[in-house]
Image (cartoon, rainbow, N blue to C red):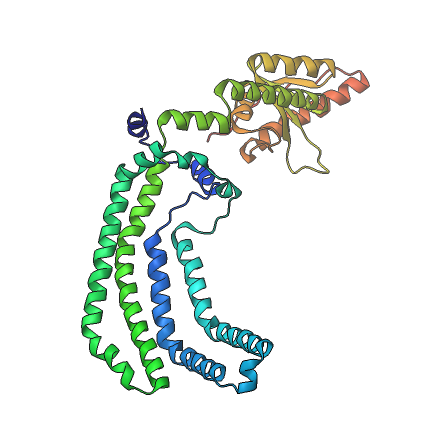
Length: 371
């Protein structure tokens, strides 16, 4: 079953899957990168700070071994002197320890970034299961880890052997040098050896980092079914989205119908299209579309307009052009200014005639400009 699941997981992980993995502190990590960074930092630190640190430690050792008979017989005095020497030793080693701590913390962040998750602190008793443990050991991932460990051991062993072979006389001659010079020389030799070992580990890390990223990506791969389920959870099922869309359209339609009584004119097709326009010359640069629709919606717009005595003007080409070229709240396009101006002049004359009881004016013929 597990093999079938792995075969089905052929798709790259989604951003949601990656975010969930990061929330669980599941990010790519390379132990070889961290080891190489620490060893290289240690080697460089010893080469640059070794003599200074060694000199301070030698001074602490000399001061600690220089005491009189009264001091030796006073246990409280010796304890205080030991505490003082320990504090000075920590201060002397602090720069080196700080460099190592920074390398140990920053190196893993190079490929996985900073992450903190409380879920990683929760004990997983399933990892104590010997059966699953054996399955991990004898899996392909376990084989890869074994090969990596063997390669790491072989490389480090070869580098260490070559270093000891070449530096044998230098190490053996330290006993003949003055104490302070021998300490500085020894730390320099150790630093050089660590740099060489760190370089070997860095060469391994160059291979291990892409491998760790690939393994992490592979472990998060998804099947098409999982992607579909995630999409449903994130975006909602098509049925729910359809119901929400219908509800939104109903609300928008109701709000649109409430604007029809405020319109100055409703231009019709006469039956298939209806577009309601409103114009306030004090606040608007051009007439604005406040409602539009086709078929049943157009019929409802005409009914509301008739109930509130909003002028209905039949101009089929203009109605179709406004319906196709304008959204709710849009100003009419500039090419339709002349046609709409004729309509508005007609509406204003019609209102004046009604107030005076005069016969209505003749409706103007509307022609649209060629595009």
